[in-house]
Image (cartoon, rainbow, N blue to C red; front, side, top):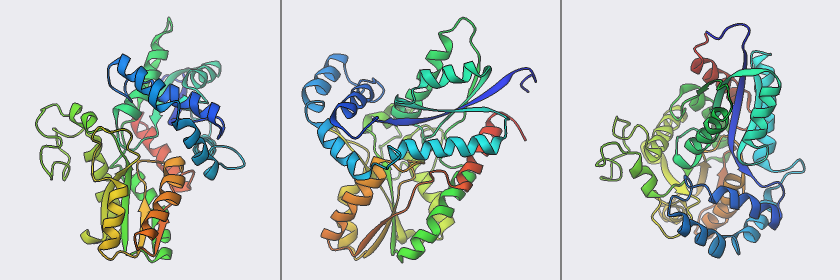
Length: 347
């Protein structure tokens, strides 16, 4: 138990967003994001060349244009929804924790959020990376940065991390509660679970045996000691849990991975290649869930809600309905509180 004189803090961490949908802010965001060796895990010289000679001269303008299509009056969708979650969780906890939101890249930054919590007297930290599935480029990078900053002080505080919640009933129940009426209203005849992709080498690095991950077509069918840290296997576990809760037949759902970057192999199947296959199979009304994201963002609203919808219709489909993310839905707020309390050993 935490001594009564110790003030507890909860740090919610999401990936990040540019400050504005313009080329300059997007370039700053992408520079910070893609300079992370856990994101682009190649030789530092190669990473610098890739970033400065290939990506940054072109991609910021294109990304800024995409951000403008989904930008909200209050700001970036990811930040707006994350702020709403922060406020709802703070209210739900009722002073049990001091709560702060941070972005791994961009603002509000992790250093600023930690300083805010310290200024409020926090000396016991619980960190919740807002990524259901663990990956080196998201949860590991976020936690590593938090640990680095907290360890830099003379007095190192207590700190705990809430583990990945890809199969946690509260998370799955909340997402199913959001999705069920949307799928029904869309009269969807298939549900696609589209997760953010990662390079194949990232999941291979997570295999302690060196022999399991991506070694067979069914390597992600069950979670085991060999793939317990495998991002792809955790994504499939999430999809199975949601499909069960939604009462989907085995033929009524599938899994894909979006947002790949560059020419190296990423985990498959790719969402943009699955969409025409589904249309050719006769799927007409497709619902897409993105359960790697707990807040709607560029990857859900623009990549799936706009571009994937257009592609699916062009391929012969009738409609593509994006299921909203959890955002600040009350069931998700309750799930966050449950995850935190369970991690801290509270009843």
